[in-house]
Image (cartoon, rainbow, N blue to C red; front, side, top):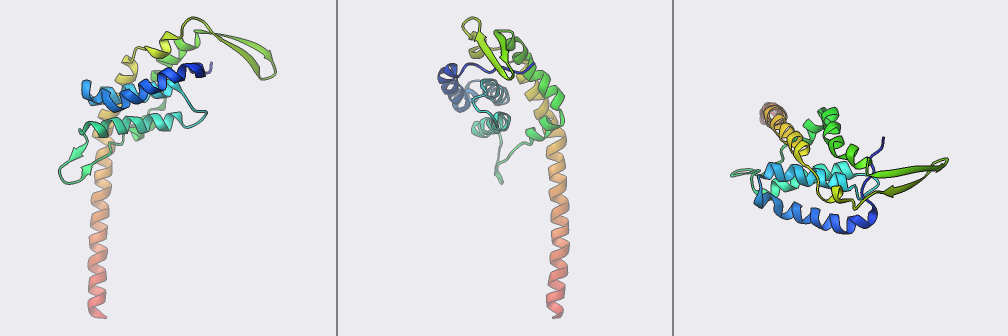
Length: 181
């Protein structure tokens, strides 16, 4: 059963609210909670035919970056590889998405017309598209953040340490070679 996003006319109300949340929510609630809410709100709004998932993950990172929680004194802003953890846990991500999309699908009457033509009718006001329970979205986002901190960030650090060691070794070899020439 495919997800049915809100009707296009709802997006005129929904998208400015998501943009406002993306700019301000991290000031009022924990930035990790805000990042999860903004990310999932965008993907539920689903304003584009393609790229909604990538943009929702970008919004997760942007919300964290705006909060100032991802800044270090020496490196400036850093990126926490939450997307890498999400990719590794696609089935859990799908379950978090379905916690909203399955009930939302039940708001619609879909009638098959012929071949690939359907008639879609939204029952009710569509309030669930504007106000939804973000518990599963935030829970998943927090789990992926923890995993990114424990595993993925450490893996990136290890890769950089190995890179630096190889670079130093090659640079020393290059300097020795140039000194002999």
